[in-house]
Image (cartoon, rainbow over the protein chains, first blue to last red):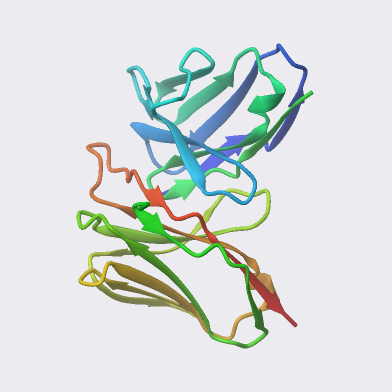
Length: 109
Length: 115
């Protein structure tokens, strides 16, 4: 199985607030999940690897204090964008195995 | 040179045409090769995945991997307007201990199939 569900699909928040995005594996257990960011007409950029029961591994240049990742169970990983700014507006996508979530369009106003 | 090169297009074809999408890569360690289709504002959807070299067919889609040339292709037969999307190639050297891939993506090719 590789069905991944992501929620919400779209969120608008005020600058300075925090937003949580959930990623769930529906038909399998995922010890590892991945979080990507995608800019318009660009490919997916890996932000971090979420590891169940341990700290996430962040890619170079990604602020771990800004993008908090929690992988508390084998079927759920969350990405929290803290103190969001307009430049954080983007399309965020999670992945596990070969499956991808539906993506979350974040707009910070 | 990027690890995975993919022409962003756009590629515009008439309905019913055979479409050929391609990627080249430089890392000889890649073993798993995937093709994803991504509609606007949606997450990527896995179309095909192959291990090592060879061909794989699924309905109107055929994936080819030529490891000696470091070249992969996706063919779409009898293309339809609903095939209009961005097609991303992805490849990975090995599975993680948890059974996951850590793919390297191409930038995607935008395909437009017009009626």
